[in-house]
Image 1 (cartoon, rainbow, N blue to C red):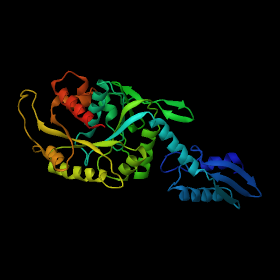
Image 2 (tube, rainbow, N blue to C red):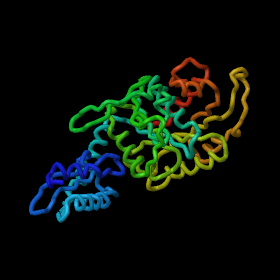
Image 3 (cartoon, one colour):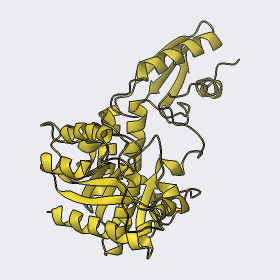
Image 4 (cartoon, rainbow, N blue to C red):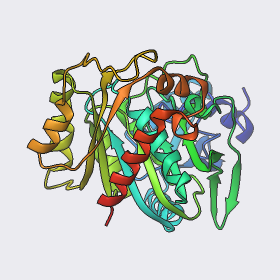
Length: 352
């Protein structure tokens, strides 16, 4: 193979960045290739300030080019642009969030407690009350918000604003929405390590053109992890809402989540706790209540930990069906929609 810039680039295109899942040439990580006296020189640009894969990728570059072009010396110069890139990313986050008045995370200690159902209906309820509202589906391993809004086949567009390439949010029921679910196959399982997941979430929240918002809700992944810590710090949350069921197992995990946000280094206010799946009410017997997961577990927890108690949400068919059909119950005339109105009113009372 002839030694020229085109062949060098074609070789380097074989190297895929593990986090961004694109080749390093496409990512713009290779610049200023020069060939002189059997020596290949080029600048290597990382995409962020501390790229854990940088050393590995540079070694791959050296090995691949040495094997392809024998007796050639490889000189890789690391461009001191990482800091500028980080500053650009932070500048972009500051820009897109500058007109967002309140950023509130919706979290749960464990999965399966209906956190996304609460997030979706709270967002639509706020919009119904006249608040400009956005929702980030940050539950990156199980993005369900697009389906709950009936927009799972939507493809967001890119827009150039100032010096930034931003994603245009999808709007439904007067809520601006962004989700990783818009960019993946619905049947694919996302097997991402924490740095990759955090980077994707940063792009979702900090790379979307939100415009003016009264509230930006962040539907976090379940549990407690470095993803949560990074998001709370970088997005500068104003507060959080905790979702749990009355079941002791869920309560135990909710306590861990509450304690995480109360740590001195995080110290994020908790606006309230929502007890979901509080009781089962059959459609045919609307006055009956069956406490399948126990009675008042979340309500008692809120009292014990001195957290505002926002609402008890029952298990009813219409709430489940609304999520599956892409029509949140709060947007309907169903009798059970009023409980989400009460939840929203209690939530607004906690906002300073």
